[in-house]
Length: 518
Image (cartoon, rainbow, N blue to C red; front, side):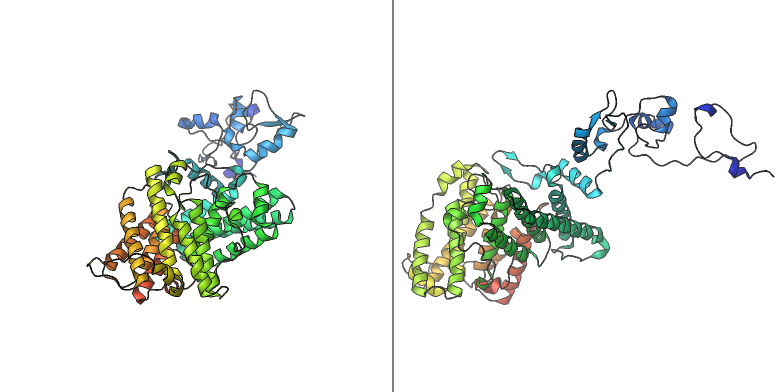
């Protein structure tokens, strides 16, 4: 009985013993042999692409190179660095072969390791591209570009995924909550959740170890969870901040952290900056209190003044006073101190604030340059003062306000209320300085917090153009958020400001009636 034609057709390439023989059946329909599409084949086959040569990607040498007795060379990048490092102890690179052919000492070939996952490859691509360069600040005369670090791959991959989520949020015109827009965002949300779980597992793993390095790594993991939460409208960000502060206290606090690392990691500085700012835009009774007992020397561990911080560009002494003024809000709200004592503290803090030397700091720190540094420091100096006027109770500020000089409104009539005079003075001066610097500043995100403070001040009824001030604040904060790597916190604060302006109220906690990241 004769076999069907299809059974007699060869489905595999002929070996060397059958080379040149005709193996087809007469009158049979010629069928094209199936072959996979090679994207990572050997160089020999890929260089022969004009002849439509396919590579089966076999290792250590593909079948076509074996049959043709050709040198089979693969891309060295196919060997992951982590596997190459582990293999160095037990394997030696075979002489006269490509890097992918790792050979054992007994002569056998090591099978090629699995490639990194797609998210890792996308992260490497993002770090190697220049798409984000225009949005990153130039500090000390050079721009700091992202560099892929294999040791920090989960953190960097999570950061790139949240950046992609941020870009999608801008397309929708709002900061997306986790799980929103499932049709278009399902893969991003799944990747986001995957790396959040991975970083959380790393945090728990390092918490179990009792070494200084493990404790620093655990704290870093919690910091990264917070940063990722701030990129989406997540309810977990404040829990992660409070959890990180509680963990820090359990392992010895800022003093222990200073002993473990000679230089404070930038992730810690960035994390602490978020705490300082978010406490200003949080109701006093809901502050994060984990650092309230720190002394100024302990706080300076996290307020490193040796490097320029583009998000908090002012001297460390000014940062400490902002923390003290926010603490005073909590103490007054909880009746921890008397009104007269609080008024005395205000006088002392304002005396220290007026003595801050921003000029010497601006020339020493590098950053955007002496002129821009000094302008930024003065803007934040006025913003700290205006924040105190707006956020502290009126009865605590009156003693100081009554000692200040009389101020006339734009119409020339004196403003009778002493505290209103100071509010108008600092709001007008703050917005004038922001308007001068804003068009020239390469990194407008450095003005986010002063703009928020000015926005709250613009809600008060006055004769000096609050509507124009609101429009300027609204447009500036929205533009900051719309930048490629713009912080979503600017838009979250803007959302609160818009509702606040529409309400007709004027109090600081009328605007920030719930914890709001800033």
